[in-house]
Length: 259
Image 1 (cartoon, helix red, strand yellow):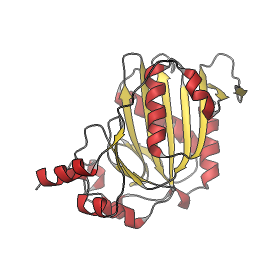
Image 2 (cartoon, helix red, strand yellow):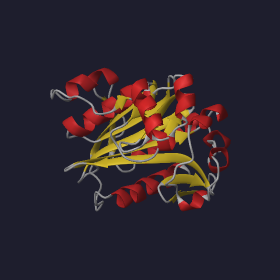
Image 3 (cartoon, rainbow, N blue to C red):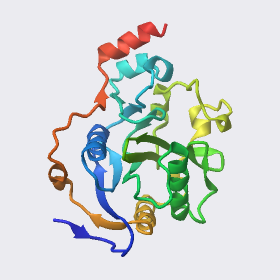
């Protein structure tokens, strides 16, 4: 059953799906399926994920990005997602927001990475209006010069996806699993993780951010809420996701190759 939420005549339709604590691997499988097998626009909001996990971009190299020994010792899952972008460790303190759109969904938006980033930053400017010194810096969302949102994208022939991991909170210990990346934004200035990132909870309540994100999205799309159990009926196409867990053997081999 579709539940109407906002009906703005003249705006493109977008399905809104909200989750709480959905495992990030399951979320990424849903996103990839919706991107590749449907022709509708989607906004997916997942308020936290059940257990800590490391998520790498499609071309990420574990030996360059991870402290593999610690990851294996503590059995932290490592996921290679289907989109580009960097590496992040996510947990219950991470809020995920994803937009999946047809190329013609946003008026005058050309489906190229920088244009999509610029569009998203304008949308989030509404969310963070009057809060902190929010802006898009290179490919990150920041307050001042501290990152709190990392982005990843994928663009297909007729559609695109833009998803963000927002650090509402994070465990300091978890950051030790990540190496300083060789390719980093200039504004990072070789800062360590804890000097580079900040917590959104120091700026706004969790529920306020989620509600404002829905409100901002509703200014550009006509939203309708859809239940998670309806996903299976959205597409009858058989689908096999490329997003997957890396095995211990793969991580061990990467560590040896990186020595």
